[in-house]
Length: 263
Image 1 (cartoon, rainbow, N blue to C red):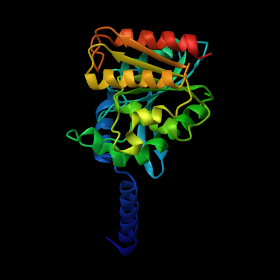
Image 2 (cartoon, rainbow, N blue to C red; image 1 turned 135 degrees about the vertical axis):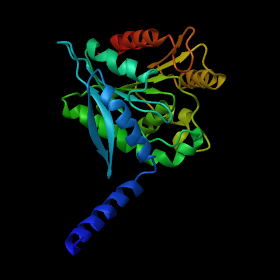
Image 3 (tube, one colour; image 1 turned 45 degrees about the vertical axis):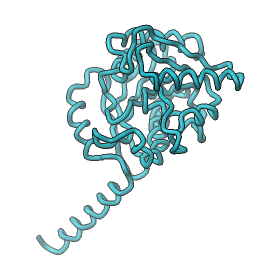
Image 4 (cartoon, rainbow, N blue to C red; image 1 turned 90 degrees about the horizontal axis):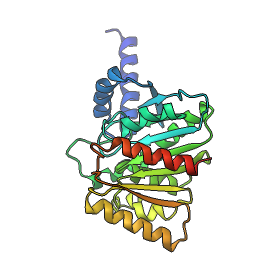
């Protein structure tokens, strides 16, 4: 290898190292997810977004209807990906036929064995990824955006919305949200929930864990104490944390709420 090629290689490696160092997410795992899911996408297309120096995957689908209602920005749960077959992909694929753009983001992740509170260092990266998704939808002419999160995705959404959310974000739909991890300020879902002024649709399954059902009761009580009239809590009978066998029921309650509350 001649000197010039060596220098180019060294510079490339340096910048690659900076990009990796800029993220505490398991970028190698993100890449493996991407290689696994992109070839099998049936609805929409894969796009690359950028937050800071980190490029990440998102799955975008356009509305198939003449009437366009807005955009749904979808955030998955712990450790998975934007085409996860439980909750995420059913929503991502169903709502374009109901007049919505959908954009499902790859959020920061850790190795499979990581516990939820180990995600605390990743939360510095959360607002940037969500904002990149918001900006992408705005670039498509969408100025009415609803964030839909599942489980850890709600904890991430609450953190973003408790800071300085983009004015194009109009509401949040929360599915199977627990209390987060209150010992970490950024992950304290209830504290962040109390700072959110947007319409908030809170959904959980009657067969979910006590951790989730108790957290929902706490949010409902907080909303009552705050006179938060734009808060709605709905139970999906027989649904567990992943809405196994209840995906269509979940889609229906979200569709009904959007129709009544997002004009």
